[in-house]
Every structure is written in C-alpha cells, then in structure tokens.
Image: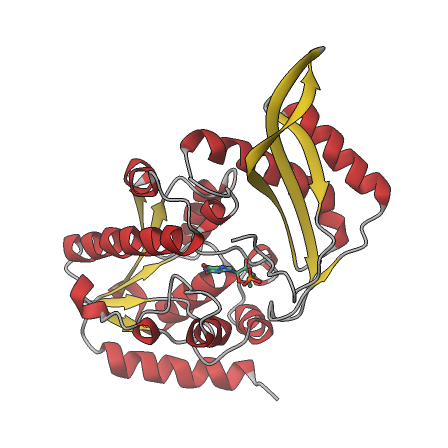
Length: 310
Ligand code: XMP
C-alpha cells in the first residue's frame, strides 16, 4: 500500500541530496503531475527553485493565468514565458501525430533550456510518472516528457533531469498532492496531455483551429463538471462536413466529444452520458462556434481506441 507521508519524507531527503547547492528549474503546466513535482521540490529546496510556465498557445481557456496564480499563491517563484508564436511556427505543415509530438517536445525543451540558461540553472525538474515511462517504452506513443527512454540525452539540451514521481501512478500522485496540502482544484484535476490542444486539432495545428477547439473544450468542461469523469474534452477534425448556418448551406467543422472513465489511463470506458447532456453540448458547440456544423460523441472504449485521437 502506497504511503504518501513516507514518500514525501523520503523524496525531500533525496531531492536535497541530489540538488545540493545548485539551482533548479521546474516546468509546470498546471497539471497534477507537474504541479505536485514543483510543490515537492519547492518544499525540499525553497527558493533555489524557479518554476516556469511556458505559454505555448495550446492551453485551455484561462489556464495560463490560473497556473501562474496558483504557483505564486504557493509562494513559488514563477517565470512566465510567452512562446506562442514559436510553437505555432514549428507545427507548420506537420500533420502526423508523432511528428507533431516530436516538434512540440523539441520546441518545449529548447524553450526550457533557454529559460534555464537565463536563470543560470542546470537542473530541470519534471513530472514524469510511471505510465509515461511504460507507454513510451512499449512504443505506444512517445510521451513528451520521457527522454532517456527514447534515446535523447537531456544534456544535449544543456541540463540534467530530476523526475521525483517517475515510480508513481496517477492515483498515488493525487495522494501526494493531498499530503502536500495542495488545493483540490489541483489534486483532483483531470489529466491533460503535455502537448495540450495540439493533439486535439487533428492534422496541422494553426492558431485559428486552436481557437475553435479551445472554445469547444470550454463548453464540454462546463456541461460535464458534475459528471466527475476521468477525462472529457473536444476534438476538432481535419475534414469538414456539410451543414446549414444562418439559413445557408456551408461546409464546416466537425467536433467530436470524448468523455471517459478510467483509473490510470491504461484502459478506459466511454461514459454513457445522459442524452440531454449530449444534446446541450451539441447545441452549444454548434450554436456558439460559427464554423462548427456537426457535433459527434465517441462511444469507443480503450482499447481498441486510445483516449486521445492522436
Ligand atoms: P491515450 O491517448 O494514449 O492517453 O489513451 C493516455 C493518457 O495520456 C494522455 N496523453 C498524453 N500525455 N503527452 C502527455 O503528457 C502526450 O503526448 C500524451 N498523449 C496522451 C491522455 O490525455 C490520457 O490521459
């Protein structure tokens, strides 16, 4: 049985030993894994840590502000890096899911490397957990935050990596969050992938498409808050469909809504959401987003599907 109190106690000692007098940087996306990691390292080394939030332009509505505010409320020194344009530039012309992940990862580490150099830091902390390692090793997908397993030497980016949660599964990460006294908004947070909305814009990622999927995501989250599901989100398709807007035939966007239950993301079940909820989501998405003419609900479990579309 996992004991969060012992884990925290042992981790604090280990982190202090490894870090010594050095300074540490932590990339925090606001997800439970990276926030717990950041809070844990902060508890261990205090102001030797600087947290960095990289705004890649792919975050959910209000997310950058929320994350920075949460970290600062915890007393953590936090740097905000606006890299939106640089991220969109690397997605140009890329349609393959793994190529998109690779482009994201590369830009992400370069951005972080630059921030680390500016702060004269050579330790990077990140929130890799056990499932990331397993799925990457199995070749299911390259999680953006697992480097050594895929043959990348982090030192080529100019720093060393510290991954205090790499032996934990998600439920235990949440226990650590509670143990550290993090707010419920963090400890019970829905998982959100590192490459963010780039995986939910099928095909090439552009700022215009991200605006559409971000708005659809906001609607899905608002309408499903009470369902307490493992993950729920919207996906923007690459192809289009015929529809009618303002009395005219148009060729518009398609959004798929995905709402799943899962323990650890290794398997998942599509939730049998009440029909009224689905209808309300569909009406809002097609009514509030001009370009969307069709809204679909995905009823596939994992396996054979994965949770994300890419
Ligand atoms: P799949 O789609 O493989 O997702 O069923 C399992 C869990 O992992 C998340 N996910 C990712 N997380 N980088 C991440 O940090 C990624 O590239 C990535 N791909 C999927 C997904 O949201 C789900 O929780």
